[in-house]
Image 1 (tube, rainbow, N blue to C red):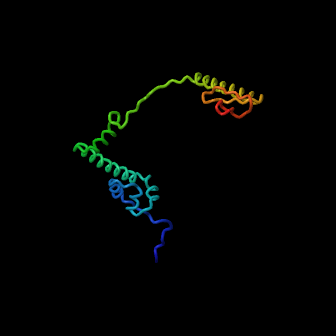
Image 2: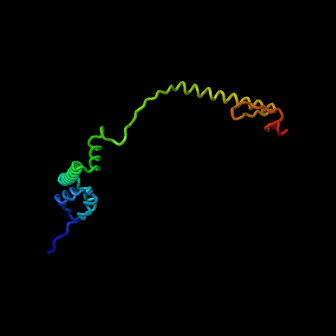
Image 3: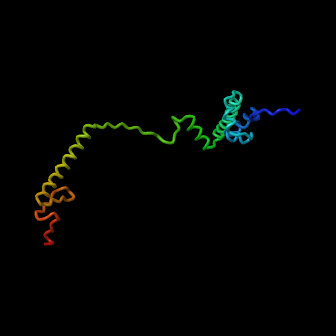
Length: 164
């Protein structure tokens, strides 16, 4: 008689030592899944299993330890880039690219608001004078300094003395 097949997926057994070794080589989870021939969702589902979680963490810790050790060795050997990187990351208070200059400024908002009100008031008076002169049939033209030139004839600018 034939053995009946169980319904559902085939069980996937993950090799914890292989996961640890691959993580120790610096591979990310997607790369580990590709190496094991499994779908990334499989590893995501099984990461809650303590032995798999520990294998990933232990492998990552080994990789970081190896790189840190090599960085330290390079810094001790006098390789400038390694020295700079090591000092910036291990002692950032004393070794950083830029110094931050802090300044404190006090702003009196009531002074700013009152100043703005005065400027608006002056502009409003000028507009009222222009409106009144137009209603009386006079043209007022302001030069670039804001002083008035009154033209009693029309609303167009008057001719200069040399043009007449």
